[in-house]
Length: 276
Image (cartoon, rainbow, N blue to C red; front, side, top):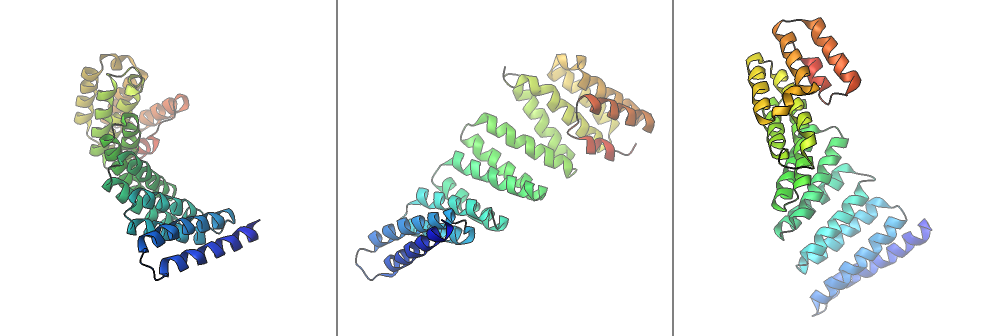
């Protein structure tokens, strides 16, 4: 099947090139026909699992659509190309997705632009490039916000906070967690996540190594959510703060181990890296 589809793709690509370079007054019509033929050719190579060839032909289809000012179709063709490149070249996939995001943003399709910004972030995350991953999750959050996709905004912002903490940009992570906690209190669907957000914010405060700021934060968290002082999360943070103030390494280690055995800590690495 792969051989048959490859041969079919080659024939379609040849026809597309001929259409594109034909001397004809109806140039727009030729570009439209070429775009369709390049797309069909790319699909055949995709079925043959000739990923790079398929991707390059989807890109050619996109360029034809751009000549015709068919921006939506051009963006979608770049997405098809990116999904082929995912099998062979992460950088190729990211490049094509970036082009798609730019076009979708230009034509006001912000949810689509956000979706593919998030996909770029996930590719960087998969490759453990958390600096770029953070940047694209941030961009996705902004675009989802324009499109009023509140749940997706929170998901992306939580990723930004997570990576900010890993990069020891604790203040930024704290601000995000506190903002999400504050907004979640007014939602029946989201309010159950508040104590987790405040816990993560508190761990980031500990990461800064400022005992006074940590104490002030615990007071602020209680003002934000009066029920928080009765939770395991609050007691854990308060006990950790005391162990740091007392410079009691053994107590600190025991507290982290006990809590983590029941509820795995997202920021266990932050806790482990603290110098007390």
